[in-house]
Image 1 (cartoon, one colour):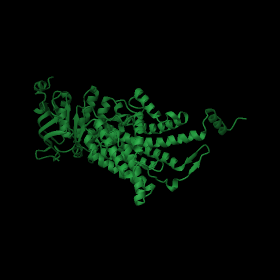
Image 2 (cartoon, chains in turn green, red):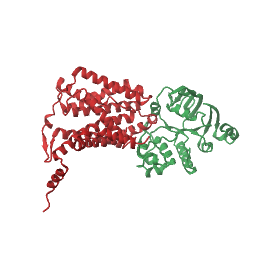
Image 3 (cartoon, chains in turn yellow, cyan):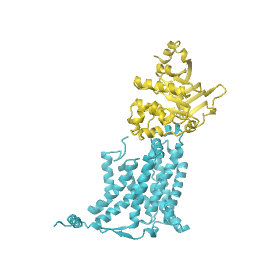
Image 4 (cartoon, chains in turn blue, orange):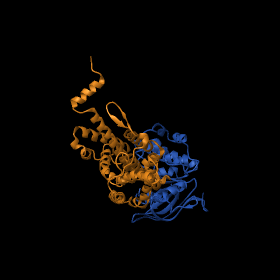
Length: 237
Length: 306
């Protein structure tokens, strides 16, 4: 369900804290249904914290987050998940005590319309062959595939991905890029945290540049080439 | 002509200087004790795995299980078989209340606070029962269906003791199966590793934690009901046992389900064998093993290294 402006997700003046440390200083952003939007920025800019705040994992947060027509700023993570938002966390969050199959089947179905297991194996054929392996025995790339695959099953239509290409070989990065493009074709809405803006440019519609816990610029993907110098400045590349 | 096998066995025992009745009798006693060690350490392991709480009230909750069975029988005439179901449910419900009202406030603090709280609770619960029922112990009859025993030739097996061993084996293995082989168990294991992420998948982790504590406490109460006809129902019955059970958990490895089961039964048998071969050491053998394991493999025989 989108709001009056057509956005599935609208964030206004989002403030966030880790304990006493004030990390987010008034984030504003919006994401329309079916869009792929990235959060770009240097290390420590507040990108991951934003994702954690959206998902309800960051305990201390204020401001407004409206998702699918519901104000979620006061909701627990499990309640936000039930609205149809899912996370592919930084460092993948694969459970060592679970097999690949158990990891894959772990998140409960939130809504009908999730991607079936067979279709998941078409997207990520490696997983089918490794079903009985311990989750953390997979390679980094396979673990990333598993982390994405398990949330596709749930029926959640909005996926928050935190640095899905970090530390992966170029061939795996390409595969993840193709997967994100296919998910976009299927109507998924994706918020992507990325350091690798070349990868971001290959999959995203728009980019928000984050610095010191706030959005300092918004660049449409079509205008990225024209704004490359500015972007290099932001990212310190 | 070679002697028959039974003759060979008898000769072997004569060489060892131990009557077979004594050896098997002590092994059975070891197995019975091991059944209780396994049931109690399993409950402790389940609770520690998910809650990170060292539940020192476990012995008191085991005692409560036996007392609730006694009360059900003596106050309202409900017998052993129903008590096997009702007592764990009732004591488990008190566990749920304790978790919600008290333990849940300690999750962000060091393990030590949970240990101190549950230790205090154990003292209070035992004190209340001691005040009400004294310490001389209350009798609880073996159910008529399990009275008597079987002569196995080499030893006499009381039916009730056989039942306790079989029942605790079935309960332990069923619990292991649920935790290691089912979807519910996968949630529990995942929440043990990363409760935040499991919550972000839409799972109600706080409720799961509460029910897990209730289940662990119910296991202790079930052990208490099984124990009631063997030992007298006594406010101190849990306090005497819990120290040994903690040693069992340390040897098996904190949080390891199969470790708790195997170590529980195994150490019961070791204790029984020690009683035959070197009786003076029987009350300390488990603690000696604990000390050795702590020196050689601090995470326990089945525990994962941190």
